[in-house]
Image (tube, rainbow, N blue to C red; front, top):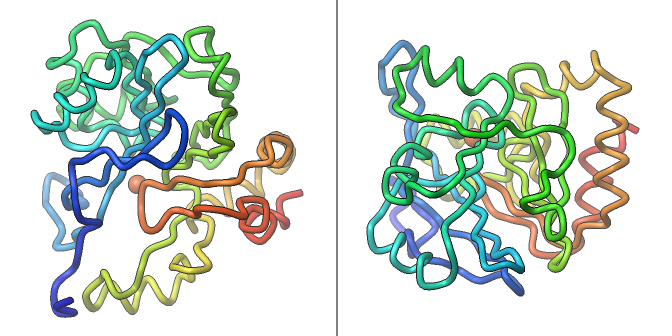
Length: 251
Ligand SMILES: [Fe+2]
């Protein structure tokens, strides 16, 4: 590997099965932008895909639209739910909904306002809440982690015992980053193999201790085995151990 360049989770834009009716798709680099300026900080993103028992596909935090990927997913089921789990993960939902106009687009709290403010073309049809809607309740449970603007709806695929997180835990692989980001990431502690809660969520969770505790208890009660993440390496097993390490302080 060329350590002078950041690296992706190759191959990208392909469905990678993790278990029964669940898999991930790694995407191309994304870049942070602030005030419409793209910062020179490439980071990787990943979406998790669940096939519900009725054949509908649930796309958690869709990555950039790709025609070949869309074809692959369409061969697996009906692309039906396009889910924004927090107000930072929504930018590609519009692209997917134009390709799949019958798909339902699901808004996280605050995401509509954020998309409007940034001129992102996306129409949300439904709103996510703290409990799972009937569309996926049989297969997937959910709850809300309070985190101020970083608050996130987290999901649990029952059959595969997979917890789907977006930014709540970050587990970046340092050798996939270039300086100065590698150094900065090391300082935050949010890196493989002991990824950590996203630092922006810690204070808001402390300030909303009761809600945070309820959410963490719900997550523990699910007894997740696997944890998928939008950034960095997923936790393939021993989910309970990771959750105790990351969230024990919130109980
Ligand atoms: Fe993110």
